[in-house]
Length: 380
Image 1 (cartoon, rainbow, N blue to C red):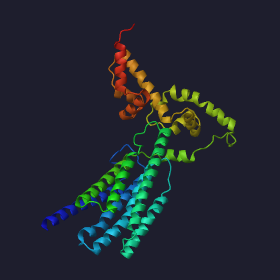
Image 2 (cartoon, rainbow, N blue to C red; image 1 turned 135 degrees about the vertical axis):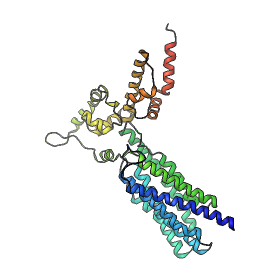
Image 3 (cartoon, rainbow, N blue to C red; image 1 turned 90 degrees about the vertical axis):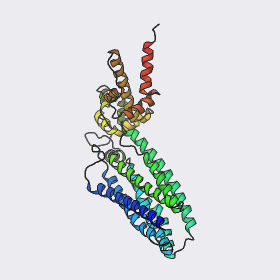
Image 4 (tube, rainbow, N blue to C red; image 1 turned 90 degrees about the horizontal axis):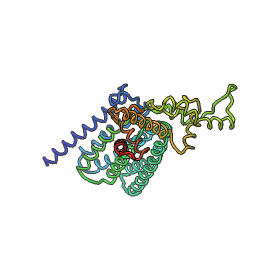
């Protein structure tokens, strides 16, 4: 009995530590105005607020589960379990889903469907608590599993859509991609499935707390390292304007077609020749403004070419890198791949490697090795 009590006390200490960590994360997001994790990044304010709400919900979740660990087994403990489960489904799960949706900044998605989806679970949980009956639990489990599959399908589709939007609007994707959220979603749903089916024992309780810590750490890190793209997203959703003439009227179709036909020479004159692509993090909207065309026309131009804005800009940067390498090699100057990548407009070496491999079907190191071998071969 003493050993069991010691184990329970150790778990309660760990349990309390996780609760405190959630409170700290919530207070940090609410009260700290600066960004301590990534000082050079301005995160979305909306995402910060929702993440703070999720952290607060996680802390409260530990509070309403606490009686279950200190009450003796019986009706009271099981009733606490049902009430806590209902509160989790109605508060923690929806807030986690909202945070994941808010991370996708290509447009403002409606959040009310999240509440609609989880409402049947809350109603079923309330019925079980009121009647102290578990006869409908098999139907609840079935609905929950179907809901999990639906959520995963929706999030995969929307995350892929968000990725396409990023490639269509940005040359540099650092601090913008959120594909890791799908991994977190899988872990979260698995944890809820294990919890609902009551799988495991004491080890499961520790695993659940570790999952909580991992989720808060990820949400906190992702919130503070995700750049605010709300301005560009607003332009993309509502900015499909038409250029106006001096009288304020929309251009006719012939005029619009004329502008589209002029985009290629405009890109050469205002982007390629002055090497505008060397600017870090230049967006589609900025480039459209620079060359003097509608961003929608510019986006359509890249689509008609079978490419994306990201591929276009990074293609120019790769060619610039090759030119710099050839000049340095001809002058017998020391060559540093990382330095040349930065000089070519890439914000990070990892992005350069990815873009170079996609363009040249090999890494920059392999390409340079091949170039060196070709130079050593005797000329016939």
